[in-house]
Amino acid sequence: MSQSRGEATPQVGLVLSGGGVRGVAHVGVIKALREADVEVDVIAGTSAGALVGVMAAADCAIEDMLTFWMDTEAFGFQRFAASITGVFDTTSFVGDIKKFVPYERFEDLPRKLSVAVTCMIKGEVEYISKGPLWPLVLASATFPLVFTPIEIDGELYMDGGILDNLPVRAIRDQCDFIVGVNVSPQRTVEASDISNPREIVERIMDLRFAASRQDESMIDYLLVPSLLETYSTFATDSMIEIFELGYDAAKGALPEIKQRLAQSGKRLRH
Image (cartoon, rainbow, N blue to C red; front, side, top):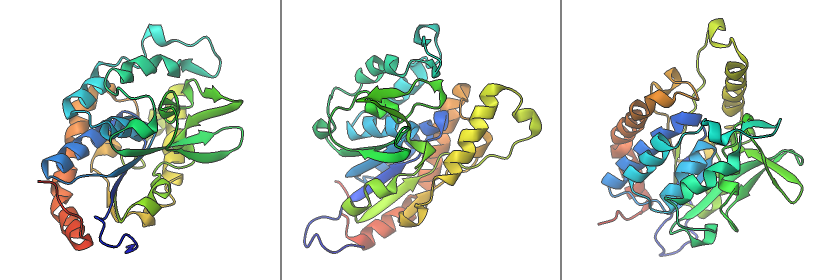
């Protein structure tokens, strides 16, 4: 752990993975951390983790985070895209999330945020932490073929989980202690679970997410809520159960997290 900050309070980071609807578990984790007065200074997120991350960086209430997830109709007719690159228009979500995040730039957020996006033309991951929030935060969550990519200056940006589903690398040098949350454990499936194009794409991304977590060893405490592997990426009817799995997992891990934070010198909020 770095000691280069001298007498400054060590910085705590939170890294949130992608995982589709399973990302609601991140909200439960954040609720538990707040209840325990564990203050997070820096956040990094990919895909669903980017969506939760921007709301956490904006200090949104837990109730507002849940409202966004539960009330935003992701697959409604009004979101159909006139494009062969995705079924639903990613930019149509900007208004939905801006109801809760009243900021336009990364620099305006109360807490530092970095999101991972995949540059489809360059073939590399990029970590965005400066400049306009929209639509790049949403670009991080553009699940391939389901949502349209975001084009900016000739580059196509898509789901950060394609290349980095646990973007600790984005903030490792800014933090003394990092908690990572992986909500996309590899699922066990049967042939009957891969019987249509949507399920095939979902399985491909599950495998891709699992393969793109090469930096887990850079995380000081990795939390993987149990039973999440029993939920699919698009389990929109199970959000409360998923939220509670994240909350319960974090509550159970808090004694060890707080012990390690105390050892790091991180002060708790009073």
